Image (cartoon, rainbow, N blue to C red; front, side, top):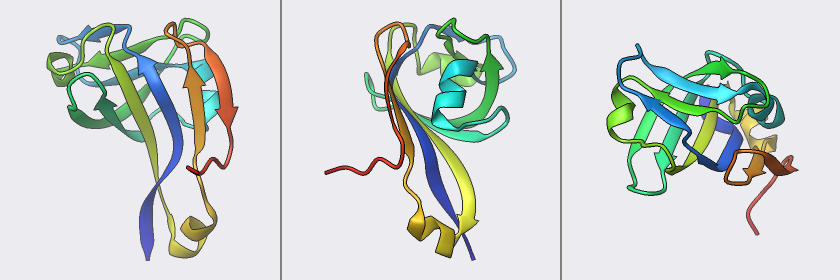
Length: 124
């Protein structure tokens, strides 16, 4: 059996743009992807802290160091520039592997510059 788990989390990222006329997806700065262990094409769940909207889509790699978090396509109606979001990277793993896992959590400032990375983080 496989279970869906969170392998990486971008905590309180700031949306830098929302492009309604793009085909779909979320563009994320390559540096943030690397820090969280996420990859282009991977499915993510995005929660808007500002309005509780929830969206699921795939990652498109953004330019490294620009701090981009861009919601593309339909979610541009639910996520606006300046909104705070939580992005959870998904993976399907065996139940045995899932029991040993905990996500990497990336914390950032208002410009999406990394302030701290906690590997194997678990809430206290």
